[in-house]
View: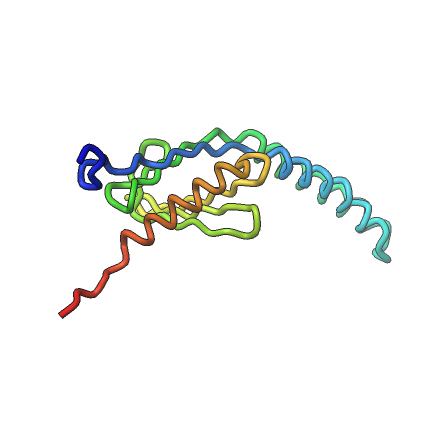
Length: 151
């Protein structure tokens, strides 16, 4: 039988690149503009409102600048739960993928115990890749289940 199930090679690891989201950057910039307006629109005394408004705008712009300057990351999820997951070529001790609608969140812990968190927005993780990631995670969970043996 040429296409015997036992002769098929194992699944390839799932590779995914993370980069800063333009949607997130736009939201941070919008909030850095709206935060000072909300402070100035409050009933705070002007002597306090203006410095607080400038601080809110500065902090929002700093957050947007920091997020825009983050380097791309590469995540490699081992096929079927066998092997080691990698983040930027470094092995991970644990890796969990969570979902909030179209947003994908990865929480990973490296071998040194450091925590890494990444979020993919729809502009950085299109629907076909989201589907592949969901399928890869489902395959990992299925391979980790312990099936009881029949007596």
